[in-house]
Length: 253
Ligand code: PEP
Image 1: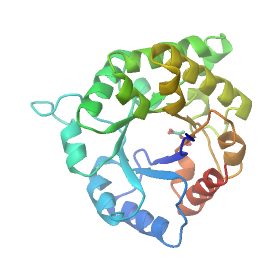
Image 2: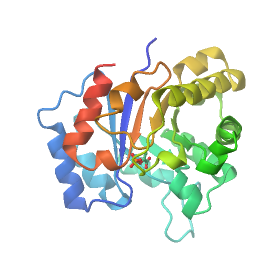
Image 3: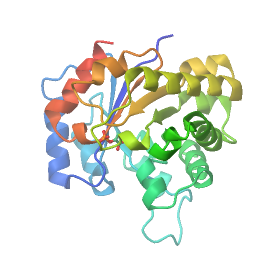
């Protein structure tokens, strides 16, 4: 069975509620969103309003982060129960900015993944090497450690439904995307790893995005790779026009 491409726009700490809602409405207007899954990832305050603006349509909503407990004395945190209640379908877990600035580790990423799955949300697990790691020839070892850590204790059915985003850290927000064949090589490696951790059938089902300076100009070449099942898009998801162009590239794959 062919995997449906999944294009997610990670707005990071951008867009007020009115800006986010206006984007969501504009995206729905006149856009052909068939044949591809589209996901918007607003900041927490805009999650509910964006879900409402998109209601009845095909576009899904993801949170950019989550905590692993359901409730309690964790000032400033947001639980998977709350995200589900707000109408989210997906949650980005372990984005490199969270690993870099907020101390997330393979262990905390795994706790978050399991919490998200417990509440029938789908994790989009981010993995990827830093520039120094790539230069040291450690890309595959780093990605293997991150994927194995994130999936520890996750059952086969849940694993098959998950999304992995391969995002080389040096490509994020730099305008320097991975070459399509390099993205393909790492995504293929991740799929084979999932095949070893689970079964070949699970590996065939799991969707593996590429992220890192995806633009309307380079999207077709990246998304055309056999093991690239979509994109996690930062900067180019902030304008409807460029985000739509990337969606259209995915529809043509
Ligand atoms: C991201 O933040 O996940 C990302 C890939 O950002 P950008 O597209 O801006 O590189």
